[in-house]
Amino acid sequence: MNFQQLRAVRETVRQGYNLTLVAEALHTSQPGVSRQLKELEEELGVELFVRAGRRLLGLTPPGQAVLPIVERLLQESDNLRRAGADFAQSDRGLLTVAATHTQARYALPTAVRDFRVTHPQVTLHLQQGSPRQIAQLVLDGHADLGVATEALADYPDLVTLPCYRWTHAVVVPRGHALALEQADGQSLTLRRLAQFPLITYEAGYTGRSHIDEAFGREAIAVDVVLSAMDADVIKTYVDLGIGVGVIASVAFDPVRDDHLVALDARHLFATNTTRIAVKRGSWLRGYVFDFIRTFVPTLTRESVEQALSSAPGENFEI
Image (cartoon, rainbow, N blue to C red; front, side):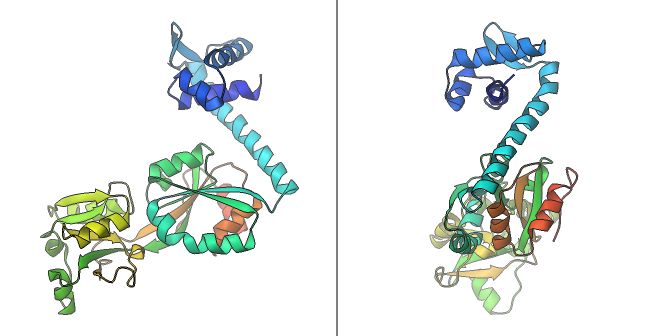
């Protein structure tokens, strides 16, 4: 039994049992992958995969039982390498952070700048994606950390820690009826907001669920004419007069967005919590703890290590 065989098993499941894709991911040949799988099955004395001719269709019951063990062994192998690197070269390496556009654009820049000052020999790699893509990148070991508002807490194999709370804002062009009403002392309501076409985030992004829930509770029909992943895109189309925008308040810059007006919407939609996620059971190099604390000063190494030792499914709140 060897790690190449174990990686072949894990990658076969990840690639939907397509051995061509498995071979590409592992930088080997398809016959080589087939041989590794077969040799492992022969050593274990059981078939791990359901086959139809040369095609793999899924896992057998023994395969389903073995897969979590394979995952743990490969994770501990990664942990061993990271531990060795941490002691050998504690001040240099690669840090991969997966984040949504909003977090990458508005929340992380200051932390990245400050971390670069204290850790000049650590290379930062920033990956952007949806909350679910971010969770998968961390689970698969392709990212050390994930930063997002939604979805991360839904994965029991992730340890998620709260970073900060934030609210939504409604953005409109200067001179818009809602801006004039606010200047006149009138309070914005959901029913008034629903009288305009809305532009906001795609489902699953940046607190969109709280927006939908707010209108749903009041049984108010709303016309979302455009949805996007990116607050800058939303503001662009608001500026064109296509609709009223609902964005994260942190994504509004009064100087850069001086052609727009932001209306406080914290009384309309529930408060959101951005979380940082790491894979349960993973070894974090020292500079990963340093980056977390740079981003969230209250998240000390001790508190993160305590969270890593917590029971699956346990979330930590602000």
